[in-house]
Image 1 (tube, rainbow, N blue to C red):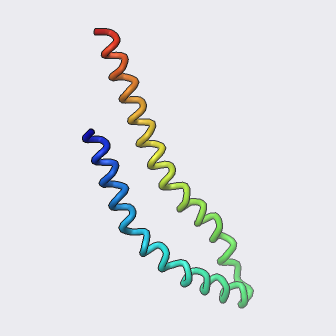
Image 2: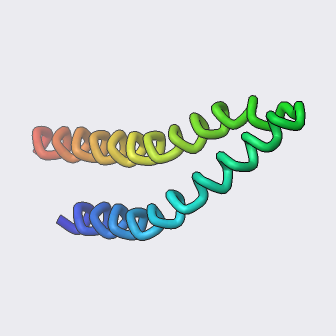
Image 3: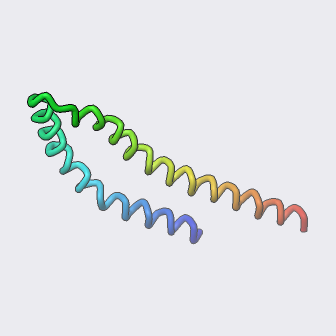
Length: 82
């Protein structure tokens, strides 16, 4: 139960920062559009950056899930051996 509370608290804290993430999108879009209009290539790496930022939360949640699963497997083995 304690693990569930920690995960719930972590998710709640992450949701507090979602509003800030949405406020940056128009600024990035205008910067890329003006850069392309001037013949720049700054926007080409934007998609890679978005994918990198998108993958980070999934990696964190996946790691936490794997560690939880592994701890449950080892505690189950201990129970069966007794």
